[in-house]
Length: 282
Ligand SMILES: NC(=O)c1ccc[n+]([C@@H]2O[C@H](COP(=O)([O-])OP(=O)(O)OC[C@H]3O[C@@H](n4cnc5c(N)ncnc54)[C@H](OP(=O)(O)O)[C@@H]3O)[C@@H](O)[C@H]2O)c1
Image (cartoon, rainbow, N blue to C red; front, side, top):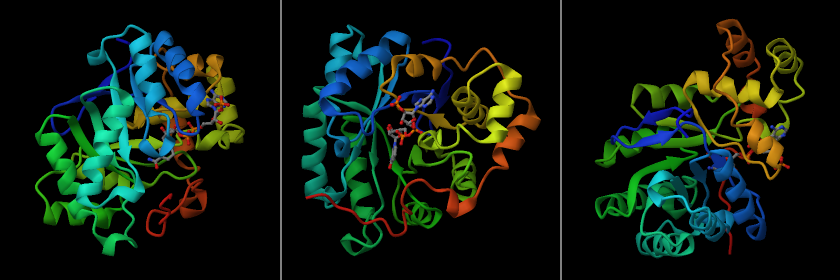
């Protein structure tokens, strides 16, 4: 929708700054949730092979009668498929599940530095193939720490278009976000409302009262003003609508700073640490 700003990625592609996330949406409920989001005006959907609901995302876009070209679709390589031949097969499966001949953005879901002999470089070079053959319009990474990004910069030819990382008021992930800013890597913030845990924070509720907005809108607006790409998840139509209504108000600099000051560093994470996360599903 025109009210949602777009951000230009380092490869020239444009991504809507606000999207809809589908992690933990039951595969059987995904098409309905995504259709609701599309009807309300979302034009950016964030899924992953790991979520097992890519099929529902593709189905919703087809059934909503929206041109494929008008929706920005991201998916991600699952952790068991980092070896180049496995990654090629997995990417074919992602496109088949979505029912599309391309994705707008494809990511390595986790770096898994303690697996595959620490090799995520050959995985990244395989994603470069998908970009070169046009089946991934843009490629990027997720949960990469600064040293992982530095290694890609040293050993490969393509700078990731995005790095999708945990980021919310309790975990502002400044080191990774600043590296992205300095190296033209767009930061996407996952769990933007910390899965709801930040919505009762007194600082957030005070700003919400003052602005006449909900706590979720205040936190999502904080992301937007800081330049992050976000895709809150909800299966609740009223919340899906609320999370899009962010573009007719602004937070003061003082309010943005007060929310940024809620950062708790590593203790603020709601998800795993990418340096040690090593889960590969069967
Ligand atoms: N790359 C990665 O490793 C990674 C990891 C995690 C997430 N992600 C992506 O990021 C997306 C968002 O993160 P997330 O799903 O973990 O967490 P989130 O969006 O921060 O929070 C989702 C939770 O907040 C609730 N909620 C949503 N809007 C609300 C509102 N306006 N008021 C009150 N509660 C609200 C939802 O409940 P209901 O659904 O019941 O309404 C759900 O329980 C995911 O869907 C996925 O696409 C990526």
